[in-house]
Structures are given as structure tokens and as C-alpha cells.
Image 1 (tube, rainbow, N blue to C red):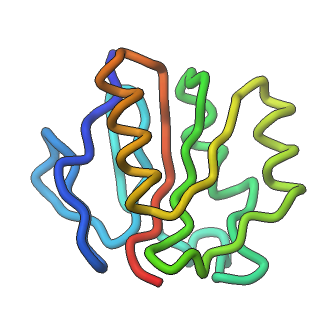
Image 2 (cartoon, rainbow, N blue to C red; image 1 turned 180 degrees about the horizontal axis):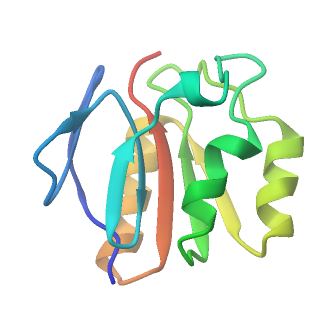
Length: 122
């Protein structure tokens, strides 16, 4: 199963190829995507992305996780979260969201087992 292409990104709006709905923030993995609802884990810009935000994507058999920190990189990614990902045997890249989407799409097009979580605003 391949990772779906992120078809478009603009402030507060993301579309994933093959998905009829659009997202503000999203999670993607080989074969699927869904909204990233911060309320599920109590996530906020600070302290930022929590291991609980990533568990679902990490369980999808990915080799690399791309995290988009937002257009202005307001979303923090604590070192403890990065350590959690690495302990699962998954490489991780943390980038500004536009760069993160470009990197994710490049890897997905090459057939990599890549997943991502992306914040599309600040």
C-alpha cells in the first residue's frame, strides 16, 4: 500500500489525493489519512506534538515520519517526542509545513513507507 499524495496545502486547508474531505491538520500513512484533532490528546503549540499524537501513524508500518510544524513553525516538537519515534525504529524529519509536505510527497512518490502529521496554520 502506498502513502497518499498531499494534493494541496494552503493556510488552514489540506487535501489528500483520493480523499473526499479536506483537513485543517492531518495525519497520513500508507493507505490512509484522517484529521489530526489536537483535542484527542490535549496537544497545543506548546509543549507541542506528543507521542500520543503519533502512535496511530507509527503503527502503520512506516519507516519515516515527517512532522509539519506549521506555516510559521509555531508548533513545538519536544526532544522526548523525537526520542519516542526513534525508539520505535522510525526515522523522523521535522520541517516547516510547506517544506514538510514537499518532502513527504517526494518520498511517497518514490514508494517510501512514509507517514506524516501536518499543522496547516501558524
